[in-house]
Length: 231
Image 1: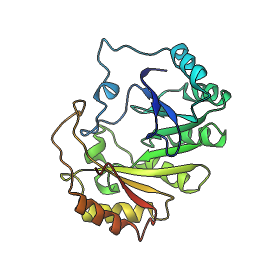
Image 2: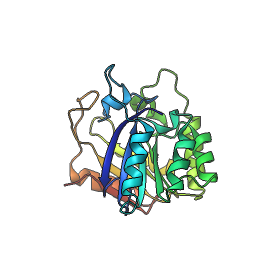
Image 3: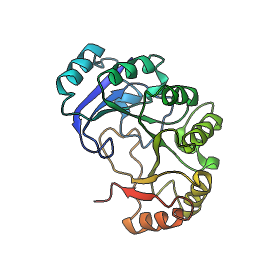
């Protein structure tokens, strides 16, 4: 598995847990606002971590860690992800998976085998506008819809989340997303923030007031809707 990053300790990536975050390389989306450019499109001279490096760290720190967050890139592109996660579970650690939802079969396998304890799935946009952000050459929403419906069954703790940008999301879009995700366990709107690793730095955040109004629009559909990234 291509591992391009390791954050040894985080209190933010896994809700309520002390975790390490592992960053996998490669993604099948090309979201222009993505702040992990070198993970999505790894440079030729990229330095990867070996599994031995990762597990040496986890074994050393497992007494202070609650779990591990696996993010990317898109982790489910890696066929050996289930085996990798099984080794983490053998250490007695919880596992959170961040995913774009394009591989529902792997998500189902991981959940049904008890290999993951929490899933955070990105929702890029309303169904009608999804590929305006995902930027896939050949786009089929069906796998994403399948992942959404599977997670809503509640077999694993989960959240949906959307990074909100002024140039991309308006109130009509937000209501459309709300109708799609209606009844979900939790939904987070994440405020867009600029960084050096953004693939195409042409976006800007909505005002906090507008973001709060979006939350109010969503609450009739998903009562457990909140904001992230507001200073």
